[in-house]
Image (cartoon, rainbow, N blue to C red):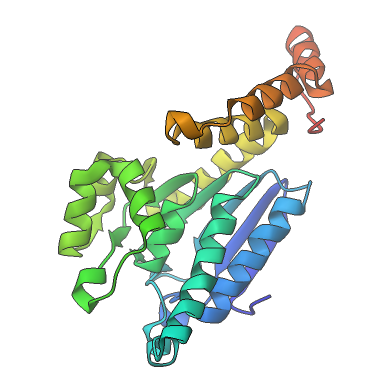
Length: 261
C-alpha cells in the first residue's frame, strides 16, 4: 500500500485520500498501484457501504499525473505500456467497485485527477474547484475509456471543448455541463460529502448494489445488456431479510437497520 494514500474507515464510509500535498497530490506510479489495491480492499470489506475519494491539503484534489516521472515512464514502448496498464487497473478498480463512490473535489482537479473524478459515481465540488484535461497542451492523448466516461457525463460538444482547449473549467461551469452533481462552499464541502455518504450508508446495501449495476447496464448498448443479472438482483432485494426490515421499520415508524442480506 502506498504511503502517499491515507485509508480510513468510519461509520460505514471508506475514505481514500491522495496524500502528496507538497506536489498538489500529483499521482505517481506508486499511488496508482495503491489506489487499485485500496479500492479492491474496500470492495471486499462488508463494513464499507460507500467510498469517498479526496485530496489532502489546500491546493486541491489532484494536479494530475506526476510529470516528473514521465522521462522514465515514457522512455520506451514497454515502459509506456506498463505505465498505462497500472493507471488502467486503478481506474478499472474504481469502475468495478461494488460500493458507490463519491469524488470530493476542491481546488485543482486536473488530468489524471479528473479521470478519477470521472470514473466515480458522483462528484461533489467546492466553489474553488477548477477542472481541466490539458492533454493537448502537452502532446499527450486521453485514453478511450476516459473519453467515453467524459462523453457519457457531459455529451460530445462539451467533451470536445474540454479536450480541444485544455482550459480550466470553474465549478459553476462544471455544474452546468453536468460534470459535477453539486457545488457547495468550500467550508461546507466535507460536511456535505459526509452527509451524502452517511445517507447512502444508511440505505439498504442490496438495493444500492442493484441500482449501481442497473445504471451500468443502462449505459451499455441494448444488445450488450445483461438483464438476466439485473432480474436476479431485483429478486434478491425483494426476498431479502432487509426488505422485511424496511417494511417493519416503516410500519413501526423507526429507522431500519439493514444488514445487506
